[in-house]
Each structure stands twice: as structure tokens, then as C-alpha cells.
Length: 226
View 1 (tube, helix red, strand yellow):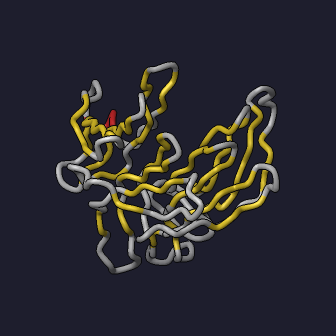
View 2 (cartoon, rainbow, N blue to C red; view 1 turned 135 degrees about the horizontal axis):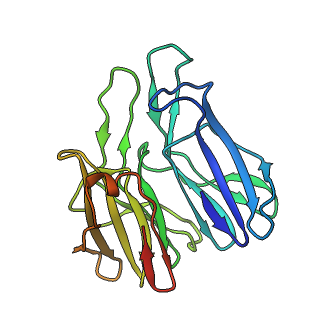
């Protein structure tokens, strides 16, 4: 989900039970809720069926990044594949516009914007039935203000995590919690400074490992909320 102006937008997800995925139960729907008058949800034009994606707002539009799609039918062995999909929903025209694809399929990641740059960190590449999932080492950046936007890698993060949360705070990128490729869930926080293209360690979250798993993070009035 992401907020644009006075409205909340929610995309995709799973209508089935936990960890039970199929093409019939996945959603490609886009829903809008007026936050000034939150009486009912309005359905808008959807697109690809996805979950485990990231969505952010930039200059009045929605940007949707990656996610995975279930290729199997209900009852069949799960065939899950991370996508390279990157698209913008134009609030004025109410239409989706394709943008440069991710270099590789990516899901269970998160995204956040610092200035005009969209950052994507974490996640893995689900490659389908019978194929091993690859945890991503790389983190990506794309200048949304560029005439010809293209994905670039930043300094490699000192971790491999998925189901983490990203947020911008004071011009830096905070990467919060998640599931590690080795070692289970974590409350660790890493901070990326775009001006230095460098990572540092931030203060860990309070609580146990699960307090950092599948969290959501946003900056508000100079503070970070998780």
C-alpha cells in the first residue's frame, strides 16, 4: 500500500490461506480509500496478479515494484516466480504505464524514495517449481527524475534479508528487520547514506526477532515509526 494525497491505495495480495498460493487466489486488484471520507473502498484498474511487491508514491503517482506470481492452479504443486515488473499508475489517467524492468525477478523486498531516487533492497528471486530460490545480494537505485531512468546497483548491503521494511529518514535509507538467509528473523537495522554510497549499523529494534519480521516503516515529523 501507499498514500497519494488524501487517498490510500492497496494493490495485490493473496485471498487464500497463509502459505497456500495459486493463480485463482492471487489478486491483481487496485483499491482506493478516501482518507478524508473513509466510507468505502473504490476499485480502480488493476494489472498483474502479484504479492510480496513494494509500492511507493512519487510526485502524485504510484510506483509498483516486483512481487511474485503463482503460476499453479488450486491443488497443484506450487509454482511461484518472482517478477521483474516495474510500473506506474497515473492518478490522472487512471492507467498503468510500464517502466524499465528490474534486472532480475524480485519479491519479499521493500522500496523507498530518497529525494528523486527509488531504492530497492532485500528480497529473493523465486524461480518456479523445483528450482532453488536465490536471495538477493544486490540493492538497486533508479532516478525517477531522469529523462531515461535506468536501474543501477549501489554498494552491496552487508546482509541478505527479505520481509524487511525500508523508509527514508533525514536523507538516508533505513532498512529495518526482516528474515535472514541464515540465522532466522532479526531486529537489526542498517542505514544507507546515498551521499557516501556507504552502509552503517543503526540501533536494533526493541523486542525479539519476530518484531522485525514483515514490519512496515515510515518517517513522520522527523522520527521513524516501525
